[in-house]
Length: 75
Image 1 (tube, helix red, strand yellow):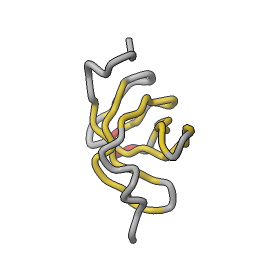
Image 2 (cartoon, rainbow, N blue to C red):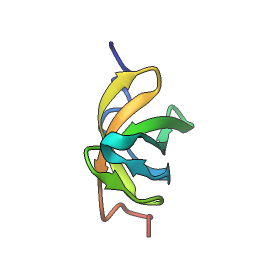
Image 3 (tube, rainbow, N blue to C red):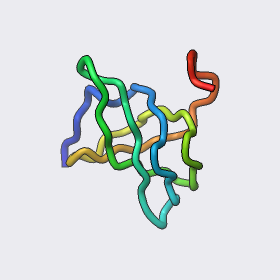
Image 4 (spheres, rainbow, N blue to C red):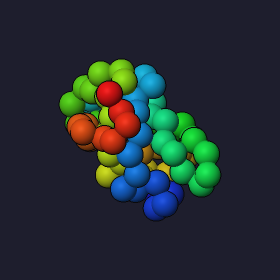
């Protein structure tokens, strides 16, 4: 399934923690002049509020993410 290639490489913040293979969380990403929320999958669980990098798009507003520390403006 083709995803949204414009979201890959963007950074965001988890608004719902991911659970690794047990289930997705949600990530808020700044894109297209605003913010959008996507279902976020990761290999390992990632806590709520963690800055992440979108590394893949699965389609239907679903992405793969990895932790991405040291984002400017994110504490």
